[in-house]
Length: 256
Image 1 (tube, rainbow, N blue to C red):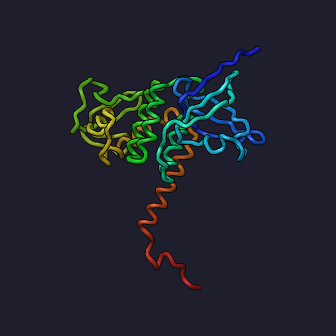
Image 2: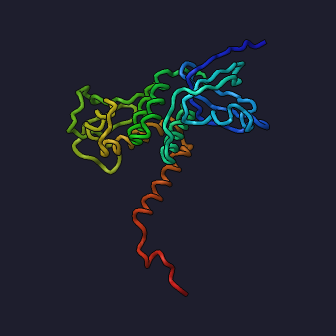
Image 3: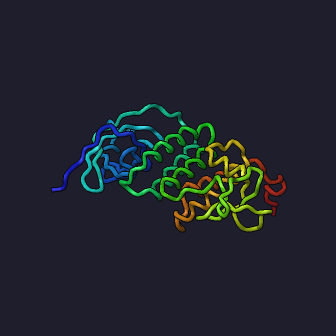
């Protein structure tokens, strides 16, 4: 008979929830000491369930479960502090963090430091969306063993010059260059050092780092696009359209 492990009051976050059978939920959760795991929450979809309103994404929880094989059974849920209610776009950004974990972190592979980085990113979303996302992406790559070289040149080992321009060559690092070309990843030394120091207050640095992180993550995500990234792109397009409406003559169709 397969042995059964019982875990009590483990800090955790719900990454995704799926309907399961008649009234249950199948949860993908990220835990501090056990990594990403799958749990069945029996009867949790019922309005009478004590867990009905608790098992939400972007909410810090303490979970208890019994594990037999690859899938566990939820046995308890408790609150663990409070996180401010996020507006719609920040919720989507949180879902983006969740999707990255679901796509890149395998089940039952503990990453305590990444768990701390995730908690920090969720709490940062309210104040600095771009910085929260970029820093989490950096910590995710580090946790998976794909950390980026950010403080010295790949070919010479020389510390980066904040005023220098660098071409970032994926899976190698930054190489100093005289000018940017039409193709390639080009960043100022100050932007790379800001990411290295976990401090991205400057919009231009965030913009440059965003392109770097997108290219770096693409190496490991494969060809299937991230759903949340597409939704965020569509929202950005709608926002730009609202700020720059077409001239009235172009917006109103010609009669006849």
